[in-house]
Length: 264
Image (cartoon, rainbow, N blue to C red; front, side):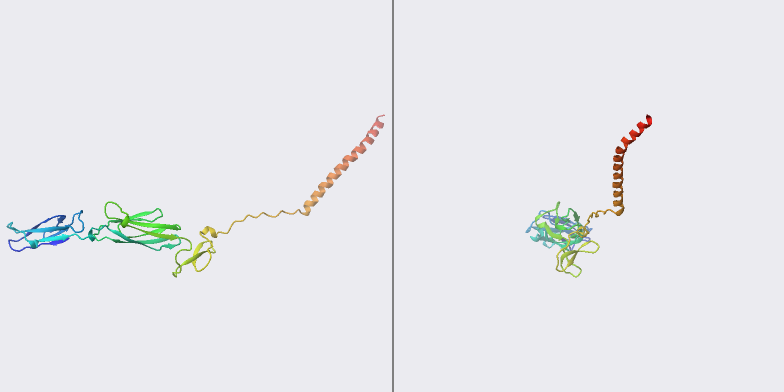
């Protein structure tokens, strides 16, 4: 609270000293004519404090009167801890990757908030001195984003915490015309995309749109005429060999008889 004192009579220049029944008084004015009073940290709603100014003239004459006193009463609202009212997010649905803008609404009548801690629900956190930030969700899923207010030595929960649920999936969100997505389709370049209108979803991820890989077994190659001829030639040769062996057995006794006559 700012206070200004004035005085009359005596010899100029006049200077001032200040006292208070609680809190602190500070001034950057060379004669302390203008000061700032700050309530003690223990102040609670309904507490009152008296701040008094004493004037001194150049001859060191002093004067104090009721007109140089001020009373400060602490209101109940100023002693309330800051409260988080809402955490808003835009957008809250769609198909990942999605960049979301967050903003915080809070009640802080005594201006005690010094930082905001954002927990995005995907393993990432961020601490900022401002009530707004952005974050990109890389994969589809349902996330609970949270913000905590810090107005003392640590972050607090309860009334100083707000949450927001976001869901990202194929088929979620809005198209460029603001129409709600209702199903997914595969494109000619094997991508899974969300479209508006009635329909049955064809995919969840791009991999679902890839053409299946099939393995075919070639039919057996039929025997050619040359193959059959070779087989017949082999069988014919085998027959000649067999007949040759039979013939030798019949001729051999006659040859032996002829050989015997020649030796006689």
